[in-house]
Image 1 (spheres, rainbow, N blue to C red):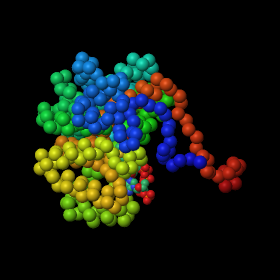
Image 2 (image 1 turned 135 degrees about the vertical axis):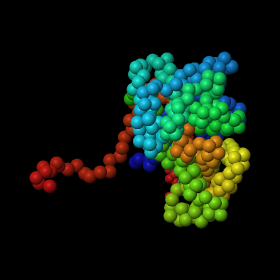
Image 3 (image 1 turned 90 degrees about the vertical axis):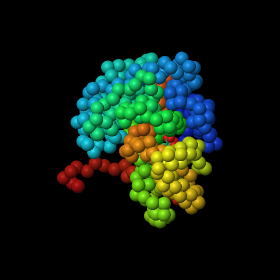
Image 4 (image 1 turned 180 degrees about the vertical axis):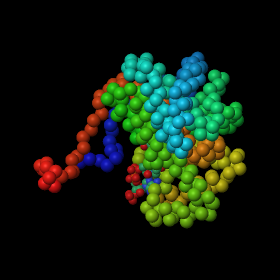
Length: 369
Ligand SMILES: CC(=O)SCCNC(=O)CCNC(=O)[C@H](O)C(C)(C)COP(=O)(O)OP(=O)(O)OC[C@H]1O[C@@H](n2cnc3c(N)ncnc32)[C@H](O)[C@@H]1OP(=O)(O)O
Ligand SMILES: O=C([O-])CC(=O)C(=O)O
């Protein structure tokens, strides 16, 4: 008998992140400690190497990320030729695919080759997302500033201005919170892809395609769409009640693994409160709180990581359709860590399907049908 959605099935062993009794850890360190104290670069290093970096290891990683941040001219030319209304997740998926196509060593499979590809992908993916926005605004593509950290550089390349410290810290924390999450759908997709000994870029492309759906990372964009559609605090109740009556899913709520709450959501909730107030949009937080209260009270459904991240990114001045690409920027650290782990102890991933189709029968020639 099959289990719908593979719920509860343990499909691999991993030492990267764990969800045990509702507590999320990266390499054994509680997400709450990382959210409050670690930078995204420290988290990248931790996910890739299993340990936190010392100061010189961290400085080296920051330098390497900035040094590899430039994106090939071919990708920029390609981006400029794509339809103006292309979704950024589609552009990102295509751009990462082209990144692999342009890397003459894409199919080299030593550990060092794969670590180098992971570094290059992580370094370039934020530049690609920023460039997607610049291209559609008809603005010049900016190079990363080697003096800036990863989050700061992303905001700089996106806007062309040195971002303020509050924005940098908020984005950095959001990147930490989204970096890895055990065997979520996109990570599983990446592992399935590379378990055929396909290359790292192909694994990341599979993962980007999988993240984009609204039941997974695409929910953050859908949450913002819902907040915009509702518009006013006093419209929350009728909107949510009608959606529930129509058996619609409320985006940003529920989770396959967490049944009593996603530990990342409280951090994003706090950030949403602070940032919406600072940017003069407290209504967004007030609407979110009201939706949260109704879903908890009436469906016992807590918010997941995608709910409050929507108002956080909006407060940072980021366009709605870039929310999921930003998730991908962060999750690339986890995807690539899982890809390296998969290669290190690989076996083809190939489960079975329970056949429920027609019984064995004969082919009927076309003139007899
Ligand atoms: C980064 C991430 O991927 S976090 C998840 C992001 N996705 C979303 O926010 C989309 C909305 N949420 C959902 O669709 C689901 O909660 C999922 C996909 C995240 C988890 O799904 P599953 O574990 O398969 O739970 P499933 O969809 O079977 O839901 C179980 C029950 O709760 C209900 N439910 C679950 N989530 C929601 C929701 N967001 N709104 C309303 N009802 C919901 C379902 O309708 C179902 O009810 P039923 O038993 O009466 O039919
Ligand atoms: O684990 C999951 O199913 C989805 C999720 O929260 C994530 O990928 O961050």
